[in-house]
Image (cartoon, rainbow, N blue to C red):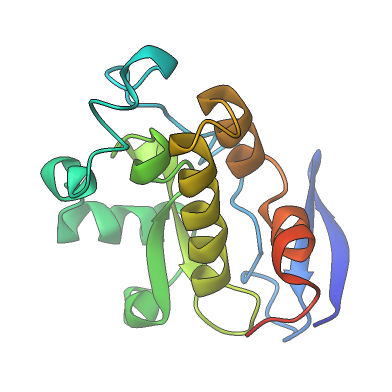
Length: 158
């Protein structure tokens, strides 16, 4: 998948080559800088994020908040079914449900929401295995997840 780079103010964004300028591979950092769950620290990962089923106990993004995320990004509510209201720092990697951690990530074109999910899962495994720190994990998620995707899975968007 080819991407093109365009500048939004001071923010450089990679845009999927679908031609739809709103389908960025990355969130607007002004709207979604990321937010961490203060209960998840390096010292607590084996009592929180590394416990099977943990995310089900903390996931709380009501429909009203999903609609607000779409509004903030200037996207029509009718496209809500085409996106995952995604956590920039995923819950399994110590992110919070705050609106500053949420953005509309499209499923199509690829790479998109499902590919970022694969990166989040791989990072979570490495975190819980002690291969990376929580700080390293979250830095990747708030940085260039696509670079991590290509590193781990190649340049294909399956």
